[in-house]
Length: 464
Image 1 (cartoon, rainbow, N blue to C red):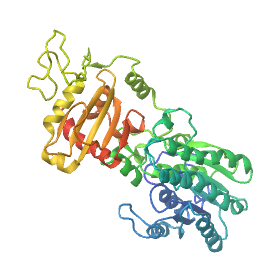
Image 2: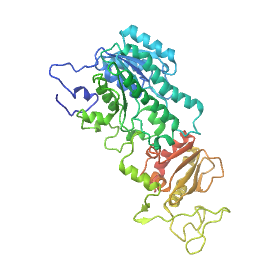
Image 3: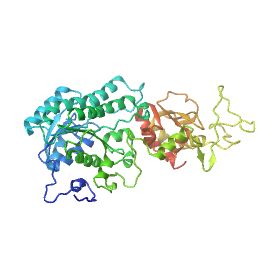
């Protein structure tokens, strides 16, 4: 066995080379892949197609989507061009009969099914009170129920195969409450996919291998673009890394079962050392994915945000900013004189501005008609920590405004976080997507407007 360090798409094909042995381990195998019209599912399909595999593209998109790229038919063209054979099937995994019909077509065309990849998934990163019942039903039925049904319907054919693998794109089950508190319904639905691995791996041990695969970092897909907004791709890896990791799993013997595999860990074990080839922007910091415990540095930042240690700025402890009294009066300074707020002519004449107050002062000065016209949102910030309190940014009405307290108009988005993280976020030291995914930032309201905030921040950060 010889290990190679190579670069470029599909280099895992040559990781393990046996003298005189064909490298096309999935040649002639039939893969039934849900959600294979784009993203991770299509990447896995194309990887197998290079071996000459048969791919059943089981996905919903038959007609071009108004925002998402690709259909089952364009994916089929790419698969055929890569060297595989394709069978595009309209399949909504919420519909049992559609799965059954696609499986029957696959068996008629290719003679059986060797591998099932449960990739199709729905996501809504919203809290319990903010998640409509129909979205709860969508996630539970697409993620957990869809995975269960596809597995159940494919299993009679998988048991006849010498390959016999089920691979769920789902995370290790991590019961840390941080992964439940911000998006409980989504977490339950993804863990349901993982519980299918736990149960079926034991139920069909020796007959069918059942494993889960999850990325170490965020993966650049259409879903990530919608969740993270413009520029998020620089913090992601390409779908290639999951395709290569999936290939490694699917070419292992049936005895490799019941595992929750992290893509990077597996590829390191297989001899891969250069992971820059997978990065969208090599050298750029990467977002950790959901459900994996954060690294020690990030954990320390989270502890600091919750008061475990004092927050410092340029070597000096931050002065606490006192909020307005109930009658709207400004708090007194340390010498007993009145200190004006952001809208006052004598702002911070008595004592230095705290970091949050200084940030809002700069934001207020940077608001323009163009920013208001392009954003059209009102943001309320509920801050905890040294400068805890309520602040707002109105980028919807007239010329816009910013200040302390509640805005005089209806709020579109409420963001809750520590005052220290707020300053880091607006100064460009903490990406909003990272803050949200790690639990530092909690969002209620219009998510589309929330994502516009990241664009707006780039205009402010240079001045902070």
